[in-house]
Amino acid sequence: MRVIERPKLHFTARENWLNDPNGLVYYQGEYHLFFQHHPFGTTWGTMHWGHAVSQDLLHWEHLPIALFPDELGTIFSGSAVVDWQDTTGFFDGQPGLVAIFTHHLDTDTGVLERQSLAYSKDAGRTWTKYDGNPVLVNEQETDFRDPKVFWHDETQSWIMVVAAGQRVLIYTSSNLTDWSYRSAFASSNLGKWDGVWECPDLFELPVEDKDQVKKWVLLVSVGSVHIPGAPRTQYFVGYFDGTTFVNENKEETVLWLDYGGDNYAGVSWSDIPEEDGRRMYLGWMSSPKYANVTPTKEWRGALTLPRQLELRTTAEGIRLFQHPVEELVTVRQLVKTMEASIIQPDAPLISLVEHEAFEVIAEFEWKNAAGFGIQIKTADREHTSIGYRCDENWLYIDRSCSGKVDFHPEFSETQGVAIALREKRLSLRLIVDHCSVELFAEDGEVVMTSLIFPSQACKEIHWFADGGTVKLKHCEIYTLNS
Ligand code: FRU
Image (cartoon, rainbow, N blue to C red; front, side, top):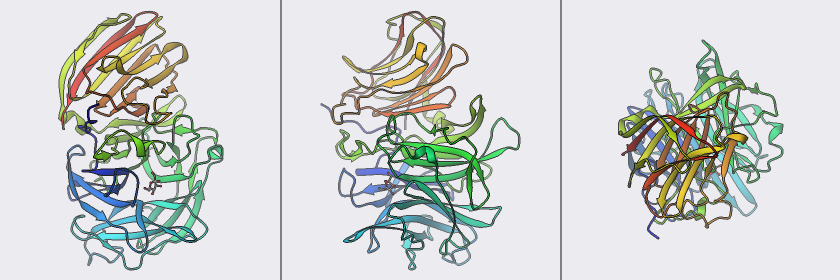
């Protein structure tokens, strides 16, 4: 079997292991991306913060490791902010970057997780740990990690959301060094899953189709292996007043950010300039279930494409919609368009794409078919199917024949979600890289991210239809180069 090729578009560490994205912050024309990194091996190990920067969210420059373990522990996940007003006093009255992270320490008597700071006076090139670390300790909590910090204008204070067992704790501070406890958010609907909460994020978004209405979104990655699908990221929509978050949905409403198996621990960028105003996010494109054994060699772990998050009103309520960031159009080249074609059962090959990442935009319409979809063929009898079963309203990614699947018993399970369509129409946008499929259905309302490990790069794209015909109303295929 050939060596699994690195993704073309998706971020990977220069070598060795990567998991969560950390410290996403925009400063002086650069998007910073830090990440959980084990620099000495291709499995999870002693955690450091790796570092890269980009000007367009697609081309990344690798920088030296930013944060190394010290006597307080290894460096777990966290965030970064621009301290514009030098509230910390670290920057002689100038703005500067502050990273807020978890120091994780294994001791003879148990695990200690405490929140600490590091700062940079040179746009993230070098980092100094604060000499008063840790800045936040909570002796009641064993799992107490992944601080996400942001400036809250209305109350003129820093807010920290931090995961603690199956709760998110909220703290405030005027200077990032002294923190006061404010409230705890928990949700009884999570009682049924036994995993800890990780990597919370809290931000405000306008509701796109409602003038002047804004809502707060709380993301929480739920580390349970008992969730249908995989460990996943849940989100809550509600209200935040500077101290307390209130979920405005019913307790039984469970909203998942992504229905695929491979998007975990994602968080959003801080300090995106107001004139841009986007809320951009990316996640770790793997699953804690099998991340340590995926079949790659010099590197292991990739991130999803950066995505823009939006809130829109649907018949079910206000929901998060996701799109790949618009910068993606700068790296794509049109290969083919099709209008109003009928897809017969066993539809012929319509395109050939080799050794490229590519994008497919397709809109289907049907009357009596039982199912249809797109098949990405990588070798003889090797393919990944992205399809819809009309009778069950079931959108799925089937990677059971996608190549290397036997490294974990659950990897070949089909991933899917029921989506109730109001008309017999479905729109899909698909981004396929060497090792991944990201599916944005219905204009980003439903998203599924899945790893694949084919023996060769994609050769052909096929359409399929079962038990009737389906109309491909419109289709565009692009190659993507980065
Ligand atoms: C999520 C996570 C975080 C933790 C980090 C350690 O994947 O478990 O909670 O900080 O990874 O690498």
